[in-house]
Length: 249
Image 1 (cartoon, rainbow, N blue to C red):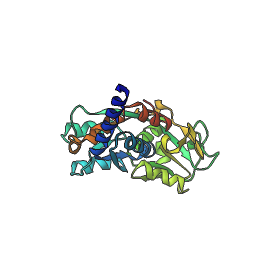
Image 2: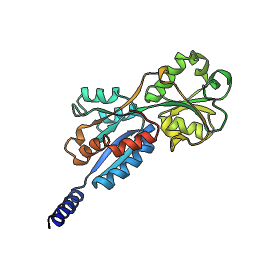
Image 3: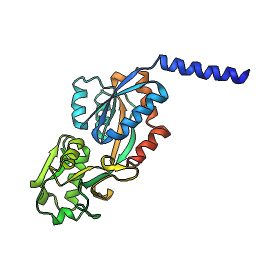
Image 4: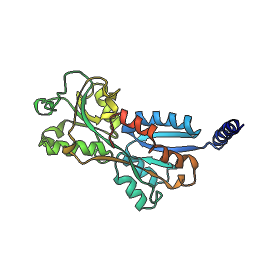
């Protein structure tokens, strides 16, 4: 009888949770597209809540949020933007946390173009080099910092083609408009390896850590789905998905 009663309570709780399911509007840094799509699917299955996702450049989201965009959670590509939004009163104080640490790669859609030391940056003399706008996208800023430390920035700068976000930088390379480009490791990794083409994982010592922070925004402070998502991102299932896409903690 007790076993049946406990099972009934569990079913009732699940039914109650679904009946109170809510939606959360999430602004997601473009580099985190693939893992967040998987996390949102698991989140819906496990909680009954729905995450409505928008992907783009962190700098652009910052401007939109300050101008009243009704996002409820921000998953940024840096730690500075969530901190600034919190300081300026657009995010709930004390809700920031690092959900992932990103890795930068130099990538080509073609095999054999990028060597395992990135020497192609020194030996190649033509063709565009794609990167995200460093004013809008932290991965773009990391690319600039890396080239600066390698002493290659002035040489390569005339060949730059910039995307608004890391997603656009990836498209430049994937479509062949640029033979190489700086993208997020998560964009080219599948099952723990580079899915196609050739790549050099930029050593972490060449740029500041790409700490990616999440924060609960003011429109989401009373939304149970928003609160649930911020907790879910720190859970084991979400962390396993994040690690499988080449991120670190």
